[in-house]
Length: 335
Image (cartoon, one colour):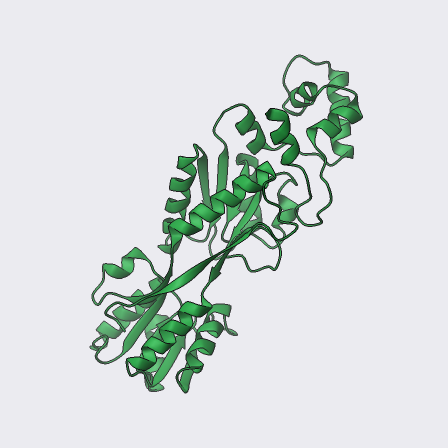
């Protein structure tokens, strides 16, 4: 069983589709047994220095890197999944982490969590995770993560944007259209999309504006303000908005606070919506209308992708390692 796992995990390169070197290839090149390769790569006793050097040279020539994930499975020790997320002060990311940890625990895996601040230092942090983990799963993985991760290590992205690669895509478009239709039925006449970006327009804000624009004529984009969310809310209200669509749920909760400070009632004076469907949205008054993603489903798909990439059941090269989890409309009190 060990041999089939080791071979299956190295079938193809993640990006090119070319066959990757296996432990058997290294053993053949060095003229030793598979067990000797394992000893040499793990600096174990029982082989001579000359043999170790010969094996390491063969591995280098073949660009072979042993998978810590594979060693954990073969030795029956618990593999470790490295999870990279954005800042944990944003409730969305602790909720993702919790679901991934629960799903991994069902398989007997450990999870190491690391965070970045809005993607800052993502490359350095991902590189450190690679040293400590057997597979890498991330929401804020750097664009060149393929160059950081050894070829045989599973690499899975959350909120996958690229056409190729392994990961889970969050499908927001249909839910945004449903939300726009709901707002129109509720009497919304002028909608302000509150962006998280000060310069340009974020991808999500563009999707929101497009979806609402198909239902309601008056849609404004309000960029983030250097003076904070109260200033952003004031700009939207000054433009006549009766509905404020926040970039995410955490943003929406801050919008609710700003409106309360101004003495405005929600939804009587102005409607507010969010994105992400966080449990926190049910703990405020009024409860937050939002579009949300099933994070348990995200975790199941993501962890299954990690497992499938290692065993060879899945391949990122042919598009077979991309999953989609849709957002859904959650109507509550705020709109």
